[in-house]
Image 1: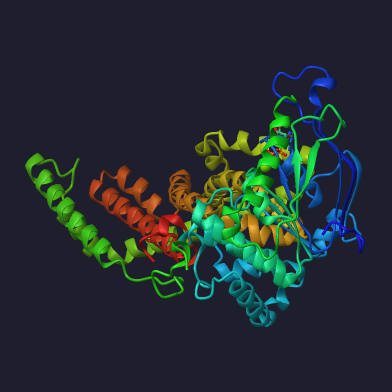
Image 2: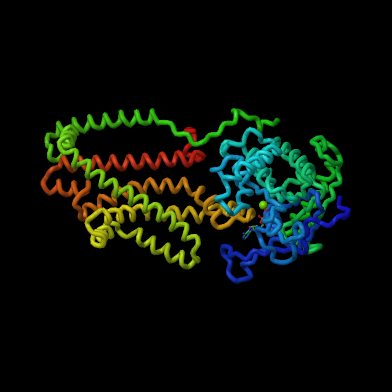
Length: 283
Length: 272
Ligand SMILES: Nc1ncnc2c1ncn2[C@@H]1O[C@H](COP(=O)(O)OP(=O)(O)O)[C@@H](O)[C@H]1O
Ligand SMILES: [Mg+2]
């Protein structure tokens, strides 16, 4: 899968991030800078599934937000679909799933899903005429996440897993090529999470999505991904980069739950764990 | 199918549907009847109708002078409703404009408003009568001012405290300034705006009455002042009863609007 026949769809070149917000107790200017991501380089191929794992606070969310154009990189270069990340996301080429579903509780499931379409159209007076057509698109998106019949539900009346599915449907309405996901299933119970993982794999397959998936679970990362990027808090002593290791998973597709019982799977998880353990010595 | 997706009920739109709250009305009627009965009994036992007139005496006063009283009530209601609507609308617009202003100007205006907000309104109200005369205008201005401050402070605060991640969602979808206002800020602030509107209604009632007390030829506040001069306590009570009734009706109207507009809100749970 890593054999680069095509051009990468996502490129990170020596990306670093320094937050310079004042922190409690900060005195001088030097105290105010907080380095989070160090020298991160990564190419992601079209249709590839890449996970980022690492201890909490190592900058996974920061890295993903930089890919989504929600944070500016302090150094280095980022390209998504050949454009700066912010442009890619605004053009609907990439889309983001947050840790929480971030649904608007005053809108029903289908209205939440068609929000991106609605915001594309600055002419609000034309909206009522288009609503019908867009609603059909929203319903199709809800169908792909198996939420048919729940179109008229308010988020409050949906379970956590269902809410996150609505968020996925919303992210899919603009038909993106890249999906950026920040611990999307972190708040779900294990059974629901397994099910969502399988659905995500099916969706990625069916739509030819490229996915960057942040998680703190090495098992989830190995199960889902073609490659797993292990990040540390602070630069790794050997390379000076946040990336400790990039693990080629190389397990057969399509992934099924039975895979989780196989020695090859355990082996990869163990490799990942070892890499993660290396991160712990680092500040 | 996992446990997570099993539809427990058939999909039904829990849309805005307002039923007459029969049980609620009934319990209010019972409460009202009991209160009136207790008041009547207390008044008769006390035996000083000048200090505590009985409800029956107030009702008799109303029967005798109802055209005048209803006329005054209509005038005061007009002041309250117009003042309330104008004040609330001005507050919402102001809160929106604030978001468009440079930080420094916003900070300054905010301070002005906090300062005005903590000035005793009664002092300002007496000025309004000087500036706008003894007619309806000055009362509308006062009622509007009371409402304006009650609503603006809260709305502005809600507008600027929208969750960062929701703003980021708007960034992602390239929302315009207006889309942020109408698709995110207003709907997410609405529950709190309604709380402040309910406070605003009562503030408008107070404002209109205070205005009339400072100088007027007509209205319930005028009736209170006038009756007190001539020692007609019964009529003071009659005016107070009407003020309360107007406040209740308007509160009911705002609550109705809330139920229509916020069918999704948690406080409506169990009502849908
Ligand atoms: N907006 C911000 N301003 C300042 N510091 C931040 C900001 N966002 C995150 N951080 C800091 O950056 C570090 C990494 O955060 P984050 O990217 O959320 O890590 P992770 O997602 O791996 O848990 C943390 O120490 C956090 O406190
Ligand atoms: Mg995180």
